[in-house]
Structures are given as structure tokens and as C-alpha cells.
View 1 (cartoon, helix red, strand yellow):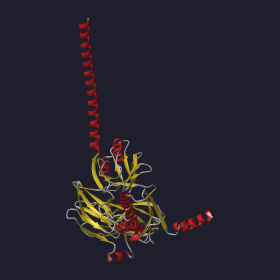
View 2 (cartoon, one colour):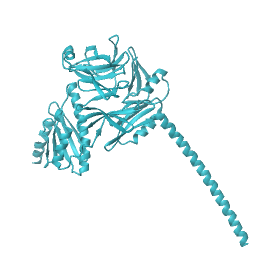
View 3 (cartoon, helix red, strand yellow):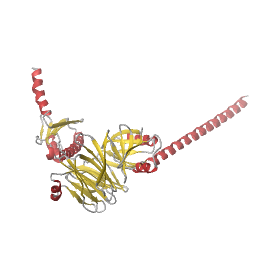
View 4 (cartoon, helix red, strand yellow):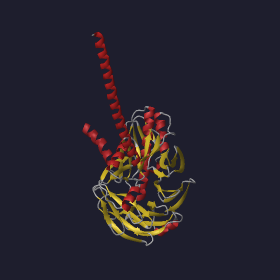
Length: 474
């Protein structure tokens, strides 16, 4: 009977979980278990929408954790799926929520509050995520609150909202001067920080643009050097690269490339992009905007992280082999091997601290690496600096880490519903710590010497007193 019951309950669940084109993820917390079921993404647009939903569910989970902990509620189950309706099953203590584009954080929390009979006191809760971006002593933060997405400027302890969007926007980055850039699914926007206004730079939904490519377009990646912008757009199994000045509109530079571009970088005339070809290989291309020519395509044998870019090419770091290489139009040159590397994981994902064990870089390469501020890797001057930053990060419980250069970095630390930006100068802190350590040593030596001197005086005085007592008694 037990075996029959097991098969009766197990087989339907197994068939449901293994249905064609379906993915399932689970999250266990002290107050709840969350299961999310969604269609397997097949196109770039579907991957993008799944990424948005993943961010929303992560934000919802953090809010749910806080609300349940604060209300003292017992543990519940949460199921999010495309075929579900929003309701709370009080007998099974299960919250069913509609997934896909219909998933809404605020509505979901209202369903929970009504089902458990607890107040919907979530308006003040904020779940911050994304990379802190430096901007002239202020910082820009991408965050979500109550189902909407915001770009906020943090300056002198005060916060002001620059943007409010119903859609998730990502790839936020500096575009030079007073400009920041961000993308939605089919459009690229620039934000004027001073005026707190944004303007549309490129839209794949423009009929003239769609007609010229002959199909649905999806904006995949972009980059700016402060003067010009490069955009990667995909249509089916083809990629297209657009290029133009920030003050104008982008034009088609390369069309119908037979691979899927996932990252693009621009510095002056040079454009570098990474892509996946039809065989699944990772390739990197180096091109000239003025000559409208792709000089070389490199096949990459291992995963890499972009360190820095300049007008000639790009510096990359290989985490597995711990090498730094430079790519230009003609060569792939390994600059350093056997780097000291430390893998860290913060609120944004996996990042690396790296430092050379010996100094043997030329002046121009060293300068480019020291000034680089890749969001995924921090190049430090030596191993001592690496160990110092590692120790600093290990003291933070929840944080996002963003390197500004080899000498500075920012930590976004989270304390409950608040967050705190802190900017650190690596060399300054190192020298200050060493100086403090030396001062402490001197003070200790002086204290020991003074203690010994006082002890000697006390013993001498005691000896004199004892001698006088003996003379009187004698």
C-alpha cells in the first residue's frame, strides 16, 4: 500500500517537473520554501525576460523573509508558476502565485497579507541590488521597490531618484561627462545627471530599423567611451553592430554576423566584442569603426574577464590559468602568468582580486591596469594590497564590491533596510595601518620601559625603608 501511495504521489510530480521545456528552481529560508517553475528560455528575448523575473523573485523573497520574520508567522510554502492563480491555501499553508510577465511583487504581498491576516506593512522596505557606479564623489545605485525599478543618486548621505521605470533596466554604466547609459529590452537610453532627465538614443522597435534588418530585434549589449557608442543587436541567429556619436544616432556598422554577440567594448576607433559561434565556441573580434573592418577573430580556449580597454585593444584576465593577456588587431599577447588571484562572491556574483607576484609590465600596460575599473575584477599593485582588501571584505556580512582603480574601491554594505556606500583608498589605508601598528609598538615599548623604571624605583624605595627600619630596631 505504501509503495502504491509513493508511486501515486511521486510519478505525477516527476512528470510535471520533467515536462518538455520547463525549468524549476527552489529556495529554502527559515520562514518559507519557494519553488519557481518557468518555461525554458530559447531566445535572447526570453532569456532577458527570465532574468527580469529572477531579479523580481529574489527581491520578493527578501521582502517576504522580512515580513514573515517580523510578524512571527509559521513556515509556509510558496509556488510561482505560469499556470497558477494568486491565492493562499490556508490548509496547506501554501501561497500560489502567477509567474511570467504577470508576476507582481505588490499584489503577491497583498495576497500573503490577506491569507495570513497580517498587516501589509512593506511600503518602507527596500531591496537594493546591482553594482554601485562611481560618479564624481557621488554614487549611482540601481534598486527595486514595490515592483518598480529606480536609479538613485547618493551624495553626502542624501538620496535622490533620477529614474523610475516599470521595466527592469540593466547594464548601467558611465558614458562620460554628465551622462550615464542604461538599456531596456529593445532600447538604449542616456541619463543627464545634472538635469535629471533621460533621452532615447536607440530603439529596435523603430519600423525603419526593423525593416532594414528584416525581423524582430533584441538589444543585447552596448558600451560607450564618453564620445561614441557601440551597440550589439541580435535578430534570430544573426548579430548586428551599430556605431555612432552620443550626440547623434547610431548607424549600422556590421550586419548579419553569423554569431551571437554577448559583450561589446569601444575605445576611440577600436571596437572589441565577444560572441558564440554556431559550434558553441567563444570568439573575440577586434574591429575598426572608421575602416568598417573586422581585423581578427580569436577563438578563446577558456573563460575570461575583461580588465581594461584602450584605443588599440583590450586587456583580459583568465581566472583558470591566472594569466593577463592583451588583444589587438593582430596579436593575442600574454603579459603576465602565475598571478596571485582571490575569488570572492558578493551580492552581484563572482569577482576576482588579482595581483602580480613580480613587476615586469611595461609602463603603458601597467598604467592601463592600475586605472581600470572592471566591475568583475580588481587589479592590485602587489600581494600585500590583495591580502589587505581581502581582509577588509571578509569583515562585511552583506555587500556589493566595486573597484574604481588599483588604489580605490567602493563597498555597498547592507544593514537591514538601509545601505551604506563606503569608499576606500587601498594605499592610504595600508600606510595608515602600518603607521598605527608602529605607533602601538612604540607605545608598548615606552610603557614597558616606564613600568620597569617605576618598579625599580618602588623596589629601591622599599629597600631604603626596610634599611631604616632595621637601623631603628638595631
